[in-house]
Image (cartoon, rainbow over all chains, first blue to last red; front, side, top):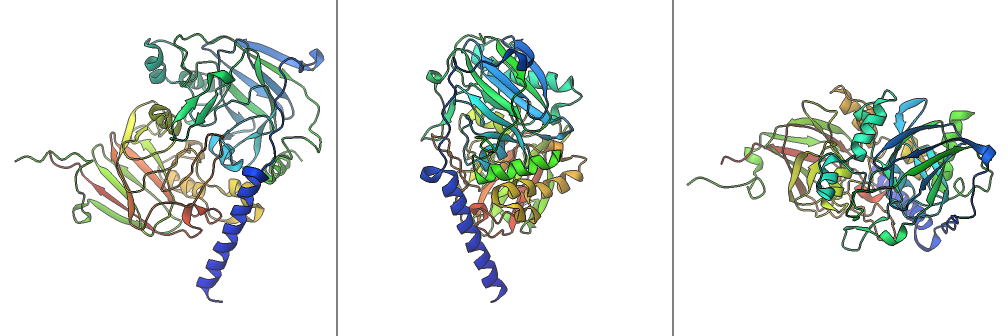
Length: 273
Length: 218
């Protein structure tokens, strides 16, 4: 076999593998997403709660989670979105990577059963609870310019400035700020390739439960998503409840969702053996 | 009569380019692009993804922001007319010509670590765009921390209404190109993508070419 033939055979084998992975990751062969979490039936046991904080509209909060702990993020009024970034506590050069998160899972739709990944091929957070299923991993948070354009006032708070301020308070700077994801932000891409916002997917009391798969520092910004068409700047409070959760078992919906994610968990676990 | 060519209508000719460089398959490149200058990235053999990052030349903590760019145009795809925005909301450059029609900026770059997750641990030991970026950025005092979601010229990543997100076969023809006209002095950093595990390079990485021109005389 010549070098050219060998290279072509390898390319054909790689294409076959890619198509098999794609079939397993999307479409009819893809695993069904687990049912969303009912809002009313999932209280957190009081003795599991470590800390809680309500973040007023327009503001931000930082949070440290140890591996295995969970934060419940709740949109109390149904009028908020929570933009989020974060870093690995032991090495802030490892951080949330929105691109790898959507690419590795073959989907831009974050919802229960999915995970968020860092840039190092490891799992950052698992979405273990989710009443909404409507979040944004693509379009990012508000900025001074987007906020001025939306509301006509120059001094309103925005996610970009919240992230810079929050990062500064844990010794980080603007070069440390990665692209974000936004909870309770029903963004999709329509057939014409334009972003769309489906307000019918938002409701008061929506929450996500995010389980840390490594020791992590998170920042949440409670500002209107740039695609939220609400005419007034009136985000309600967001609550952050940090709590202890049982260790993930072998049947854990996130750890077993796909071959890719199973590998990412294996690489993550190696940090802690 | 005074010419009134704008960069978008000027007919750039390789013969009067101020810069003409071939980037081998799988290799990085970087260069300083002055305000008003236009860079053309040519997909010499077709179906070759080109990963690109932009930094403000005099303060690289201001850099390209994929999310600002796609939010402002309300579409996730980069093409003719796209204004490439910085993390501070300023226009760094504009796409002033495009033979391809669609480029990605949401999928990020490939890395040894993400390849291992996507395609199996054996692929961890293959060259990747992030290796290129780290090496090229190190020449400018920048590190892995400075890598953000990049532009993926000639990479075709459709996103459907249900959220399906797929790297599919590239649609750029041999000789296809995209022109970027700088709106501020920028450091342009490129990785000629080495990926062989998905269709972004037709499973066969190939060379590309970078040309640059000064702003046409007014």
